[in-house]
Image 1 (spheres, one colour):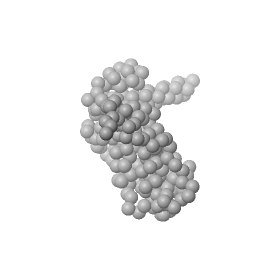
Image 2 (cartoon, helix red, strand yellow):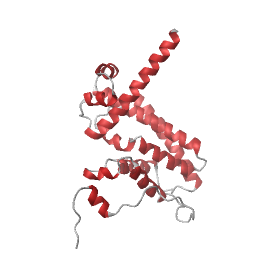
Image 3 (cartoon, rainbow, N blue to C red):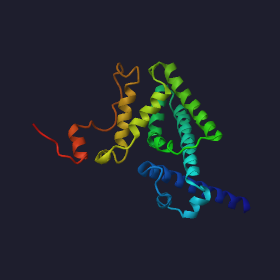
Image 4 (cartoon, one colour):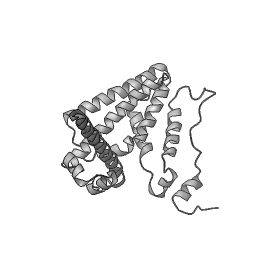
Length: 223
């Protein structure tokens, strides 16, 4: 009975941590690192004491969120490598998974208040090594352009996954447009894309300039 209770307590604590970190990621991305912690409490659906017992200050929360995202990023790279025998397809799967984590969008916010300690350096190094192995395999297969490095892929993901400004965010409420643009960008890194007759088209539909104007809620001008 005692073991079952300890297991239940640990499981409840893990679920609370997951809710807190997911809420913190979204709130920090929307409002910046100065966002009220009470907003994270409400978004996570927990009591204030649950947050403050686990994280005595904002710095501790930012540090744990960053470490968690890096661990999840490494898991995404490992999963991509395990699922796809095609090394370039594995890179593609990983980049899309990273976008779903909103890693690229939120990391710029987290860097503003991040204090890097030895444990975070260890996590960061492990994640980088795992992702680099994925990229090395894609290079070795001949599918990923040799002049594309991990930094290129990371910055590409950051650029494309940052929130759209103003009313343009209404174009992509579910993230589908982000994944379309990632596919378009990744096709440009695939050495076989130009000659592959059965290339899979990117998801979604092309955007026109009129679409952008309508989303930004500004009238289009006509000649």
